[in-house]
Length: 163
Image (tube, rainbow, N blue to C red; front, side, top):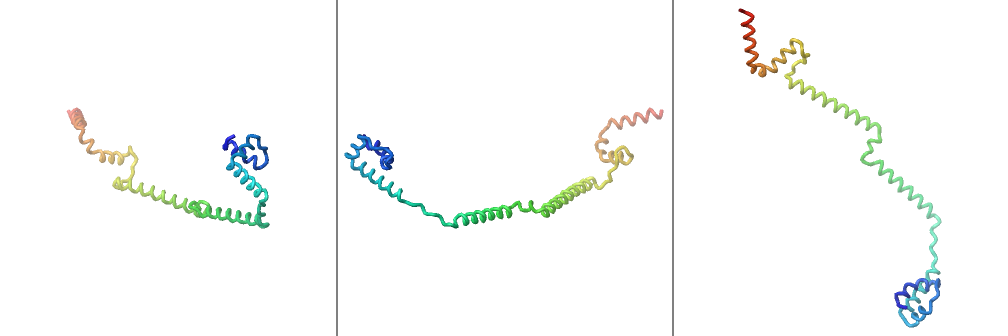
C-alpha cells in the first residue's frame, strides 16, 4: 500500500470505525511518517471526545429576543422616516393634490389668455354671422386680393347687368 491510500483510511482508523488490513498494518510499521500522523489523529480525536460545549447563559434567549425586537423596531422607524413619508400622511397628500390642481388651472388659464392676446383681444364671433364674415375677410385680405379672377368676374357681371 502507498501513503496516499493510508491517508484516505486514517480518519476511520483513528476513530476505530475500521480495522487495519494486513497491508495497512504492514505499511504503518514500515512508514514512520504515516504511523506518526495516525497517532496524532488518535490523540486529536481523544481530546475532542473530552471537550464539553459551554452552556449558554440562562438569560441568553431573553436577551436575544429583546435585541431582535429592538432591531425590528429600528428598521420600522427607518422605513417610516424615508423619502416617501408624505404619502402616508393624508394631510400632506391632500395639500399636494390641491396645489397640483391649482397649478394646472393657472397654467391652463394663462394659455387661454395668451391665445386671446395673440388674436389682438378680438371677441370670438360665430362664423356665418355678418361680423364673423367680415373678420374672416379681414384676416384673409391678402389672399383674396391676389385673386384676379374674382375681380374680372365682378366687372363682367356689372357690364351684363347694365346694358
